[in-house]
Length: 201
Image 1 (cartoon, helix red, strand yellow):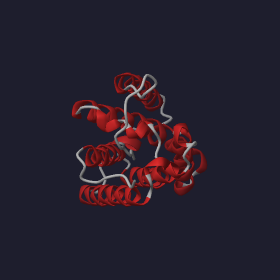
Image 2 (spheres, rainbow, N blue to C red):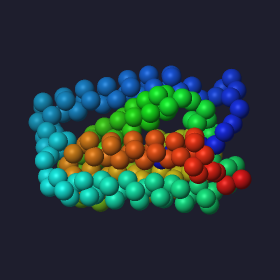
Image 3 (tube, helix red, strand yellow):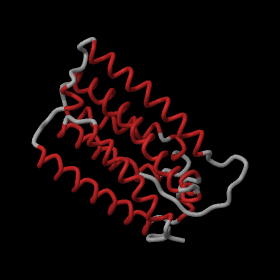
Image 4 (cartoon, rainbow, N blue to C red):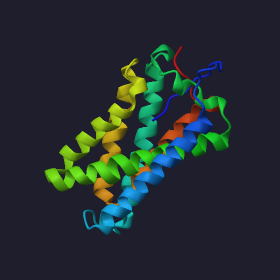
């Protein structure tokens, strides 16, 4: 989940266009690796596009999405701006297309890699769903190295990471965590961009 407040741009500030290209490349690599793993029968296509109970999937997706957005709003009301990572403070300075594009490729990469590859490997190896979800979530947290300087930000991603892992396990459809992850990130960011909610001073 992403957090934003207005800051002045400076020479070393986050470059969203470069980030979009980078995460697009990472996503393509993950997709190629997943196709390879399916073709070599290490993974099954059913791990990614199972057609389970559609009504249950929609319910789980909707509840998770709503709960995570509320969670983000509550954290915003409680955490002062100085505890929020500087990168997150720049997002609302970009236009709508840039924000949506960035949030999509980030969600796509993280879910293909962490849930599609890592969580599936762990599930096959450990044969324990929750242990696989927890380990993949810890890796999700570890990838956000920029948050280590402001550790309270880790709380902002740990709970969502667990939820993304759980809804992927429940649905066996990679589109579900990608969709929820994307909508949570872009929804929360736009709430800040258009001052629907504001960071605590």
